[in-house]
Length: 287
Image (cartoon, rainbow, N blue to C red; front, top):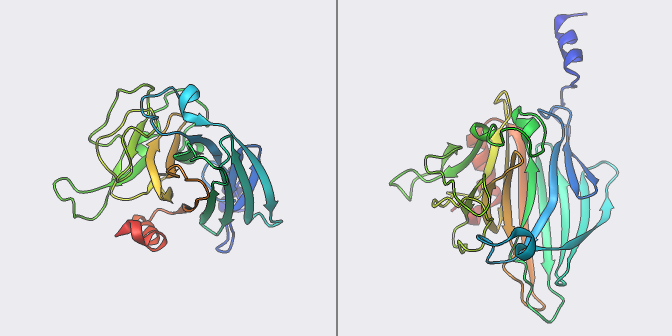
C-alpha cells in the first residue's frame, strides 16, 4: 500500500470526480448539500429559517418579526439533483421553490404569489447556511467563540474613496465593524435601497455591499463557499458560524406574483472566477 493510498483511507474521503454533482437532501427544515470532497462534510442550511416583517431592525424577533410558515416537500429527484417545495405563510402568501444542483453550484428559483385580498406582511426571508465545519471550526451550534470563523468570511466592498471602483474582497471583521444592537454578536449589511429599519436586529454596518455575494474560505483555503440572491434584503454574518444572503419579498400586493433567484457556489478558491460567474448569473445587479 502506498503512502498516498493510506493517507486517503485515513482521511475517510473519496476524491470527487470532475463530473460529480452536489446532491440535495431534505430532512425536516434542513437542506443538506452533499459531495464527497466538501471540507467538513455536508453543508447544512436552515431552509428557510424565517419569513420576516418590515420594521425588524430594533424589534423583538419572536413577537414582531417572524411570520410562521409551513413547508411541503412536493418532489425530489432520485439522483438528488432537484427538489421542489412549497411554503405557505400564515398571512396566506405562497412561495414555491425549485432547487437544482450542479457540479459546484446550486440554483434556487422561487415564485411567490399572494392569493389573498390583503397585502402580505412578508418583506424578506432568510436561508441560514451553517459553515463551521467547512471553515475548520467545530460544529454548527451556538457554542464556543462564535467569532472564531470570522477571518474565513468575506464580502465585497467598494474601494475606499472610489465608489465607481471594482468590488474588493474584504475579510471579516471589516475595517468598519459595529458592536451595538438589540441582539449581539453578528453583522448586517443592508442591500442597496433597502430601508435600514427593515433588516436583521444585529449590529448594522453603515457600509453598503459592492455586490450581493457573501461567503467564506475552507479551512485550508483551497475552496470557497459563496451565496447570492436577487433581489436581496441584506448580507448577514450570523451567530451560529453562518452566513446569509437574505432575499427580498417586499410585501406582495393582493394577486401579485414575484420571482426570486438565488445561487450557492462551492468551488475552487478562485475569486476572479467567482466574480465572473456572479456577473453572468446576476447581470443586472453586477452592473
